[in-house]
Picture (cartoon, rainbow, N blue to C red):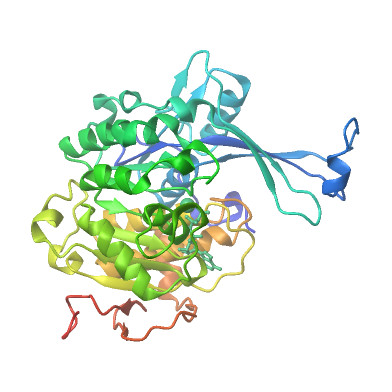
Length: 414
Ligand SMILES: Nc1ncnc2c1ncn2[C@@H]1O[C@H](COP(=O)(O)OP(=O)(O)OP(=O)(O)O)[C@@H](O)[C@H]1O
Ligand SMILES: [Mg+2]
């Protein structure tokens, strides 16, 4: 992996931050501490009273604010980060890490006196699955009022994630989340929302996510969850595909269309479902009046974004690590939208940035500035072939996207 400083100058991420941000990325942020356990397996580290010698620890920031926010910044989009930390050592480490990406990158962060910052200790024993010890800290007390009207002024888009890891956002049927998103919408911003999969055994896994989605999606222009999160949330009330906590439904295009259709009916304008190695599925509203309420980041051509159903496969990549791949894919999507690209090219931007992300071990260091991403696509970057059955779908002429049966631009849509 190349260090940013080794790249030609035009491929380097910006080192300073403009005063006016086009995008505000708000919500979850935490510090990950990942000790190198060396050869120690699960048995060795669970002996009461044992002292286990370990190696150094990697410290990295995680969560929407750090992952999607820094990815946007590296792509060259003027971005303000609004996560919440405490005035404690972990909070200071998070702020320092953000400043390492540009002198003003921590300026929008909220520091709450006397609160504990959020952290995870990631225990990766040899031969066993990873164990996360997660402290939600300040994420649990994040309120709509933490994002002031002044901080929204002048921005085109608010991106928020992940409500399932933020207690005040999912409690009370999501009213606090509704308050924040409705206010951003009323101020004319485009609103984008990402999820995380709730731990079924935690309080977030017990709430009625379908009800929360009904409440908030009328204020969400871009709803960008993953397949697993969507199966969990829409299945919570037993609707025929998945049954909440234990939900499992094999990935297929019919269920994607059904679930996206429900999310559009709840009020979202554009639903993009990340489908891991299969890429990105998008279905958009067929209602021109809903698209016209898209806010300041409105697409250049509304007809191009209306009544669409598309799937874009991933670009080929040598995978070093998939941490933050979904968050980076969202950053690519928002970057394409803000550059006024048609929907197919916006989706191509999304999976291109997603692929850049998986080529590095961490979430964002594989991401290069937007012109370098464009060059790589133009130079014939190969795409993966979908492993999903694509019956009823057509291959598009534009950018390697597949066009679904519900797409209005087809001669005989469903
Ligand atoms: N093997 C791969 N090659 C290229 N791109 C990939 C690969 N795997 C994942 N991606 C990219 O990463 C995205 C990750 O999608 P996924 O469904 O895992 O989202 P997620 O669960 O939200 O991820 P995260 O854990 O980062 O939040 C895909 O849409 C794609 O753009
Ligand atoms: Mg995700």
